[in-house]
Image 1 (tube, one colour):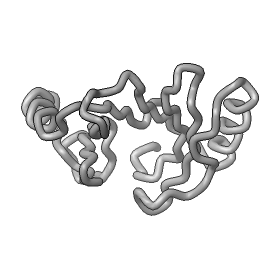
Image 2 (image 1 turned 120 degrees about the horizontal axis):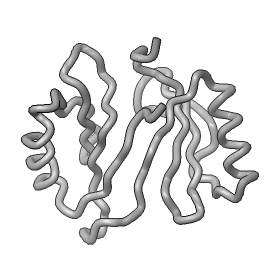
Image 3 (image 1 turned 135 degrees about the vertical axis):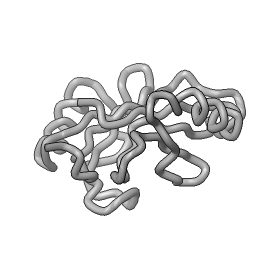
Length: 128
């Protein structure tokens, strides 16, 4: 159900170096390069990354986390967005296609603590 998670880090290069080495035994490699954000995923022929590192922007790091839940289709993403807003979430990106990858359809809301929560259609084709 979890599609990907993003950590905000103080020093992007130090974190890339650390996670590249630490995740290597688990079969993870750097795959998605959305500079300065880097995505790690299983070492395979697919494009999907499920663990991202991104700079905090101010050099201090941030407790705010990004987590994306995989949805079956666009209608499910739309329903997530509506229900999350009705439950008190704050809009952080209405449902729609994103330019991250072809067919990447998602919606973003901020939870009560400001965490960025996303629902996304499995654009990678990894889901059966």
